Length: 159
Image (cartoon, rainbow, N blue to C red; front, top):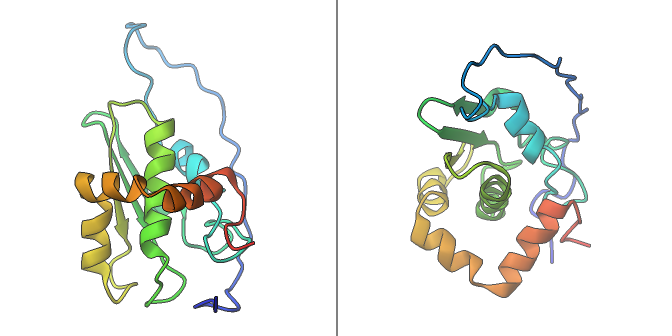
């Protein structure tokens, strides 16, 4: 199978060391807040479906494109496909969604979007990635689920 982006640009990755903090929370039962860096750490090592590289290495995912609203229980991720006609965008978004659904507390609603202006079918990809029924139907496909699981596990599906 021919790759759409045969020679992608590979970017340097940097690990942000977060200082441990002690919050003065009176309510021990209050849910622990998440921040954008924590959420980014969950998805940065997802493998690209086409290349033996992570989404961070391909600059598909950046911490600045993660928003967390603890009060509303919402996480918004925007990702940038490597090419404007990337046929793997839906698979990348699905991998992001599954990873976050498996990793975050259920109180969070997750929205996944293609970065505006970066994909020729941006509206269609966004619609598919944020429709519960479409996501559920996609994950019922054993081959697609296997590919998503490989991406999440850091194994190259392309290999």
